[in-house]
Image 1 (cartoon, rainbow, N blue to C red):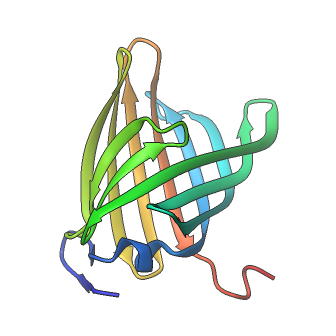
Image 2 (cartoon, rainbow, N blue to C red; image 1 turned 90 degrees about the horizontal axis):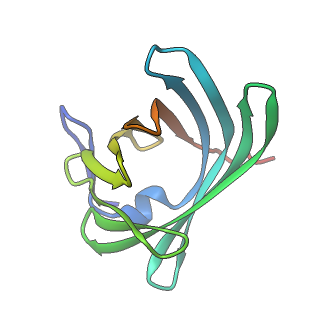
Image 3 (tube, rainbow, N blue to C red; image 1 turned 90 degrees about the vertical axis):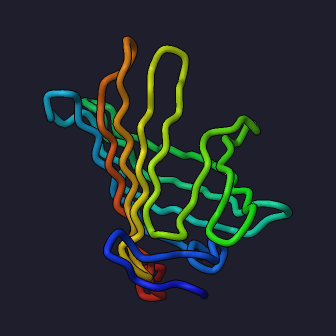
Length: 155
């Protein structure tokens, strides 16, 4: 894997090699006042399939009185060293990604709401993703920490 640490993040040029495998995930969602809205604890995996690196997450969502399973699938279509276009499972475009500097900011409009995201690669075994969502229908921040799972974590 071709990666190096910088002041802004851990550079990633080989997305498939970096992300491949299973990652523990811990997500916290807070409203605009900072009050907790939800948590998700689970596992994310990246698998090379056809023309994409497929991201699958599954875990337990706790939101108010609700506690139950949650899943998500995204397709990272690698288009160069450290570069990908991220698509929803239904095929629609979500956002671009450029991790050659170890950090990437992105904007995604969703109807009248705006998702402002940032991905930061901290090192070989951990990274995070933050989404700040604002608009008439939504107002929250979702922060997800990822840590590479070891063989011991998987048993």
